[in-house]
Image 1 (tube, rainbow, N blue to C red):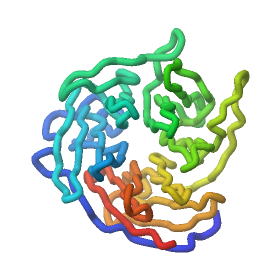
Image 2: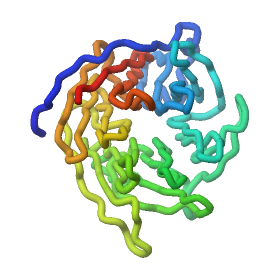
Image 3: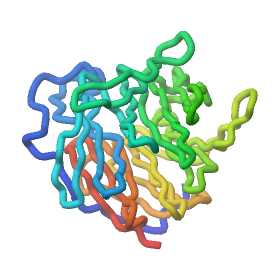
Image 4: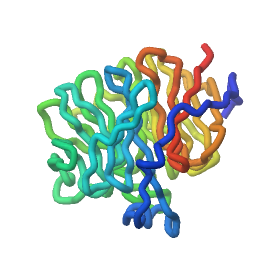
Length: 295
């Protein structure tokens, strides 16, 4: 990987208030992923709504937060689940991927409807991330506990009015997923291979799509959340490395962004109006950082 054009340090923007940090026994998910630790939260799945509010999921405790532009935190949903990511669908529904329940719709503060618990006769391995295309197609990943020793992570899509389709089933921990701004390309984080994969969103009518390694990364655990902006820049949250990478549409490293604290980099989101402003989530401290990227 060629060195970055810019090396930057993000600044603190928001932090989960003490009153919203979990203080009880760790959940089963927390015990599985961070044994022996008292986990106050694990923030994931950052995205902005049309009013510039930032939404975040708290995986181990089934919570969804909304953070106003001024930094006010509001607990919007709290379910018995393990919410990894949520998005507002084009029709206004709140669709989420839940590690335990599968693909769900949040219907009220503490209620949800399971839309799909698996594919074919098999349950999902454990859903991880999601995004909507401009045509309304839902793309989502199914990572479970896959890795290089069991490269069986999956990528699915759900077209509007259609049924769930299996796109790929050979990914070492399929995780973050996003589309290029024109919707032509799908990027998928293969966390346990330390790679970002790329494939066409125009899927073949028969057979499997051609999937390639777009980025080969190093350090930390591997890429987690992904995001693109209108210029085609691709942001990558590098898990357990306290940093994010930003790549040009050609795959050149444009910027390396360090966090001032925290190593559990989980998610990235570009601001909808200031498209060069990137939000970076750290789950270790429950913080959101931001950075203004140079041209």
